[in-house]
Length: 270
Image (cartoon, rainbow, N blue to C red; front, side, top):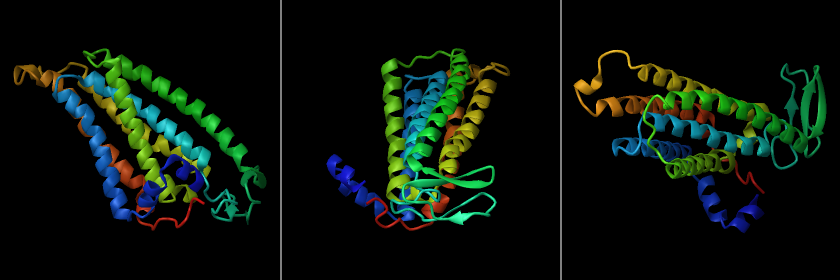
């Protein structure tokens, strides 16, 4: 890891991230999260986007989350993996087995019996399954998202959505760099947990967003434009952004609570 960072010229930045206190890491990532969520808000208030565009932007976040989740799965070094400075023991779910796998191997439990296999094989197979399953989830979610978005005036351009995706990708990448790599979350997380993490956050978040969007776009009730002409355009988008930000911040803090309460892992990447 150190050699790679040196080659990319990122070793100094990585050292700064490693030295961040739990409070500083929490403040930095929440501030980053709020900043990124402000991008759709600004586009909405400027009249460049409508509520449908906001929905599409949130769907693009699914893709960004999936990419970085795959990176986590392929680099996980938690309790099941040893040999690179990580924990040196593993156990079956019922606690009947405990032992240290050979360096570079992972202990998995098959029919209650521990089996040691090359860690890279487990990472690649798990990553492949995740890519297929999460990709299918994203496609299905996209069908509902675009169906709802078509009920409004989608005014965003391909270039605008591409830039939004790059912002989301960079944001989640920086958060991954802070928590997963610099603060050593990957040493404390098993491969199963790494695969489940995006679902627990994204599913709850986007079910809430899609459900709210469905209710908002039904067009039932009094016409808000009779009270404020811009409300018909801004109202649904503002509600979606507010719901998303609240759930996003709460889920983010809950996910990283244990990591934020601990000290960075010293020299985790050698």
